[in-house]
Image (tube, rainbow, N blue to C red; front, side, top):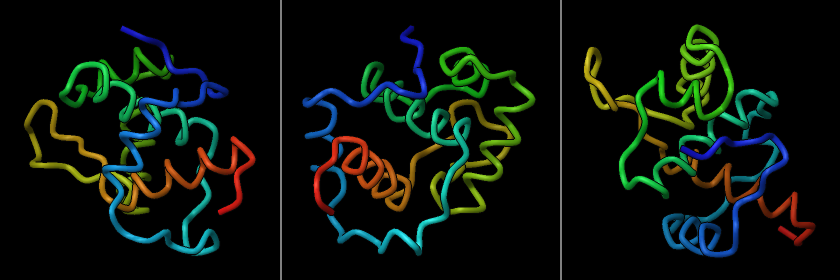
Length: 119
């Protein structure tokens, strides 16, 4: 399992896949809530885990991949859900965390900012 660092950026293949998944226009940056370092790491961790495994992680797997406690991960996921960046398929189910279209746009927006490209 790959650990996701806060400074890790997506490689070109992953970024191309992310662009393909994001079919709608960017939301203006000021309409997207800013994420804390841990929230950004968790959102990137969800994406990287999915790309590597072709399924989404459990909360425990996400916590381990992002080096965040399970309790903090649950809190972070709840906040990401409030922002609309993640959605849950159903309560009480394993692997029920999904990245929403808005979450994919946020990842893409943040990656473009990190790479210094114009948005």
